[in-house]
Image (cartoon, rainbow, N blue to C red; front, side, top):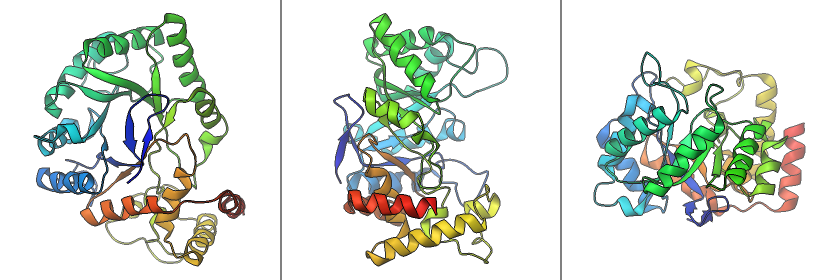
Length: 315
């Protein structure tokens, strides 16, 4: 496993990260992972060199954080833990958003669930139009000064919102976002218009989620066949099981196969070919998936490869 700097910070994260939004979930099979399974998956991740573990305070109503805390007991030093705040945690006022009150209330709960006294990367899960960005950033900076948080970032922000955060921090003379976590994969390239160029210019690390397009880029789906029972797209196709999507998929499968690789390996290699990508967040329901995800980092695409892939994606 290779490691990269998280944006312009000094923190090193594994090129593949472990997403844990399925830990503790029971709402859509086969995504639910109980405590024992979570520990097995985390141990395998650490064994293959994955140190970046991503969660949120609301994943499975906090169970994801609890499972991570249990699994890392006695080996906290081996992991870089990233969690999030801002999603609603209950009915009533002040139980969502990016206010000082909500962030301070939730960071202590996350610390208790994770069984740690610091969070490596604390991320604002969603932008909050009701809270001034100055209030959010000053609160996060205070948490850094207190030692509860080492670095902070954002998730699901538009390019202008990340820019507003970075420049507000500069004006206030306080610490700023080191990373942003957007949806990004070969079938969803929206961030390339504005967010990616901004992050390259200002050295903000990118942490893509859904790198396999909800599993469509694993190779398990075939044109004219129903999606395999129990898969994510069987429950919700998310507009991916179309003739156009299969046209692209088949071209990409051919490109990877001609070079002795799988479409899954191509999906990760394509993201990692972008220097501003710090770590690619990938979930796993079994240890074999952790191993396969980590092995994908061995394929390094050339400039010519990327140009050819762009042509395949554009049709």
